[in-house]
Length: 263
Ligand SMILES: [Zn+2]
Image 1 (tube, rainbow, N blue to C red):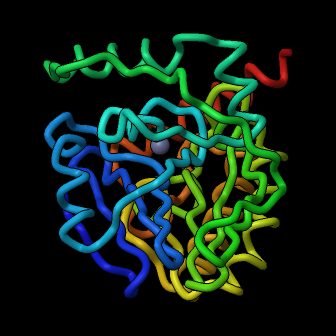
Image 2 (cartoon, rainbow, N blue to C red):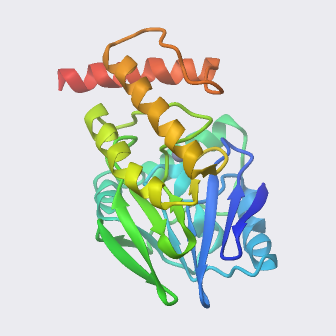
C-alpha cells in the first residue's frame, strides 16, 4: 500500500491489488474516506497510515457497489458508509453480492480475513446532490456505465475529482453488470466539465491524473467505446493499456454488449 498526498487536505492510498485507490479528503476538522484498499493488512493499517498524515475519517463513501470499493468498513467498522441511491438499490436488489464476490476473490488468492464484510450501516445519498464536510460541500454526480450504479465525488475547495472506475490510466473502460455503452458515454460527457474544474483526478484503479492527463484519457476512452460499438475484435488499445488482461476485458465488453442487445 502506497500513500501519496495530493495537497494538505487530501491523501490517496493505493492498494497493491489492482492499484485500487482510497482517498481521504478533509475540510476543517472533518475527513471523508472514499473507497478502500483490498488486502486485510492494508485495511488493518489504514487508520494508522491516515492518522500519521493527520486524517481521521468521520464517515465513509463508496463510488459504487463493486466489492473492491466497499471494504472501508473493515477498517472503520464504527463508521457509516454513504452510497448513491443507485448503489443502495443495487445492494437491496442483490443482497450479499459484494460479500460473495469478495469471498470468491479471496478464495482465488488464498486471502483470509479476520472478520466478514458487514454492510449494515450503509446510508443512501441523493445523487446528484451535495454533502456537507466541515465548512465545505462535496458534490455528488451520477456515474453509471461501468456498473448500473455509482457516483463521482467532486471536492471543489481542493480541485479534486474522485470519479470511481472511469478515466483509468491502467484499465480500459469496463462495462460491468447492468452496464450500457450509452450510459458509459453519458458519464464521460458528465465528467468532462468536472475534469475541467479539477486540478487532480483520482480514479478507482491506477495513479491520479492531472487535468490534462485525465482529459487525454477521456478522449482515448471515447475512441475505445467507438471501436467497441463497431464490434472490433482487436481494436488498437490506448498506450499503456494494451495488455493481455485489457484484451480479455475487451472480449468481456463485447459479450456484455451482445447480452444487452439480446435483452
Ligand atoms: Zn473497481
